[in-house]
Amino acid sequence: MKNRFETILGQDRILMEEPMKKHTTFRLGGPADFFLCPSDVNQIPEIIHICREEGIPWFVLGNGSNLLVSDQGYRGVVIQIYKNMNQITVEGTRIYAQAGALLSAVSKKAMEAGLTGMEFASGIPGTLGGAAVMNAGAYGGEMKDILVSVTVLTDEGEQKVLKAEELNLGYRTSIIKERGYIVLDGVLQLQAGNRDAIKTRMEELKVQRVTKQPLEYPSAGSTFKRPEGYFAGKLIEDAGLRGYRVGGAQVSEKHCGFVINTGDATTSDVVQLIHNVQNIIWNKFKVKLEPEVKFLGDFTEMS
Image 1: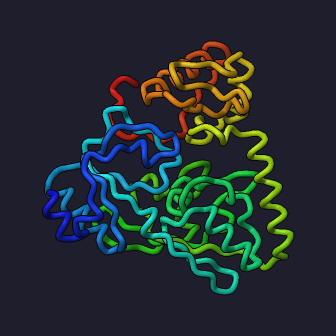
Image 2: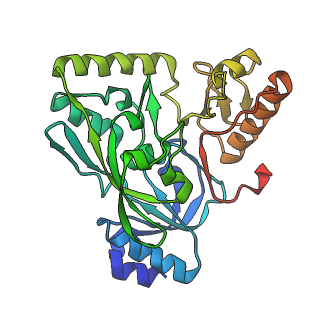
Image 3: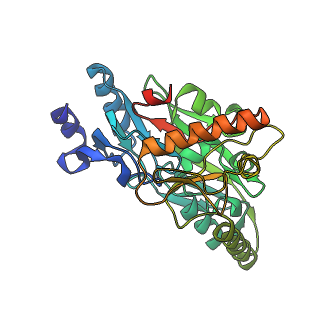
């Protein structure tokens, strides 16, 4: 397989037994069998074709900001489209960006062009591709407010352009997620605005994040989805779980909606903490907390 991948990517874009803790914001996770870094969207279907023929699973990775990888790692191929596929172009009030472009970089580009509407996303630590899949949002804004279209790769290796209205964008979900499509790029529609006012708003949101969120610790952001009629962080706080720990994993003392890696956590610590919190919240309030983070690898311990 390594030889087959080399014919597509060359030797310098293939890593074997690569520790996934180097590629997630949680700083957790064992090794992936193959870690591939394509530089061209046309290489992705070729990689997936090989994976299919060899009967090995694959996973497309962005910035790893919403991902929890098993301590045992991933027995398959990780395809990273973050660092080598991150071009951003501004044309009028529209922004064209590849899937690997960080939202922070796209937001900065918008600000520099005097375009408003994307300030909410300036501190979300993910890529455009991941944001489209999950309809990422913060501070009253969501991707569905600004997304015009995305180019996706289907299971059959076909590239399709889907308009925003075709994506069924909802709370942390989309048709992209449901069908397992791979986002290649996207088009955003913003509005002309005052550059200084946009910059001021982005700085205001940054202050809010730094003040209220445990950004000094590795995490995957909000650990749980918002249950209907409730706030996950408030439920966890009301249950007396602020600062609750399992090994090196902890419910943040600054924001109870975040589970953090205090420095020596394992993925198993985080998983056990998530389970314990879910059980406690259910027993106290009869509310089911659903993880917002995505799990990759062998999590038989979760059953």
